[in-house]
Image 1 (cartoon, rainbow, N blue to C red):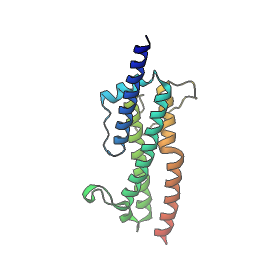
Image 2: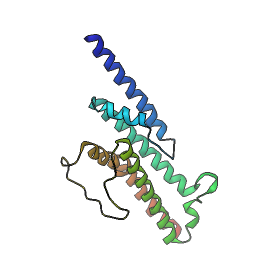
Image 3: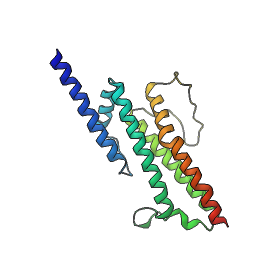
Image 4: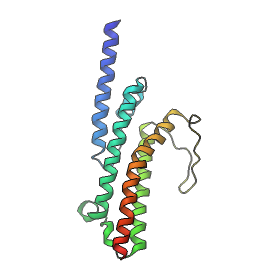
Length: 177
């Protein structure tokens, strides 16, 4: 019995290490597809909440770092081979400049939400583009949706919003003058 428990624990550790590696690789990829194996790994780690929480914290940190560097790259260098062009090329037109920055942020948040819904195998909730989302109170939503909410707050929330909000006014004032 002890041997089986030991092997089971080793199996969970291997799943944890593999998922950790995959989540770090996700940070380097701009186009992210969640594989069935990754979904299954997260599903299996639900039986070990301590490992899952540690894994989700690492995912959040990786995505936060990736979003920040991707935003700065979009501002200054643009996309691969120059397309789309850097957002700062529109700095002479404040409305276009600010609109492009906000559009980039919107697209990044939508992509992050899609990734997390795919990771936790959540089917579409029936929201149409542009419709208002209804958020249930904490404790009244499914465990997966609570994780998504926490991860969105962590990855796109506090620290990244501070970086964006500190960058936006400075750049607007610099280019408007």
